[in-house]
Length: 103
Image 1 (cartoon, rainbow, N blue to C red):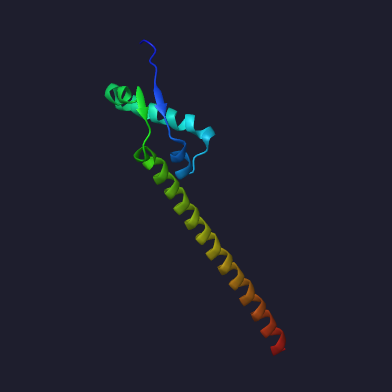
Image 2: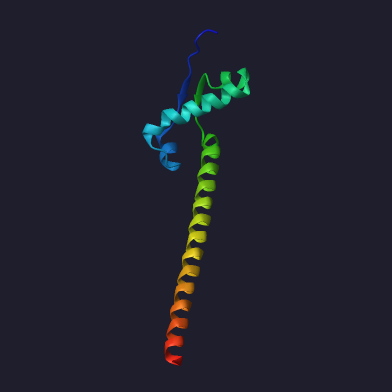
């Protein structure tokens, strides 16, 4: 298969809007090419000379939101475990103090 050239342009304002560092721009383009390659020649040809639009960031935004939601769930779960452990500790101390006062 002959080598193919691609020109993918990204407006820097889009990178800023979607909180992507300039250094991550090339890897974002590579992800687009990889996905297009797996979807077939028509999608790949579409990227031969392409200007990135906001819609192209949808998968990235969805992945970020998913990770953030998972992070929040983990944090809440850990917080509940800490609260439960503290309650058990406080309950244990109260029971021990009550036993001493009863003697």
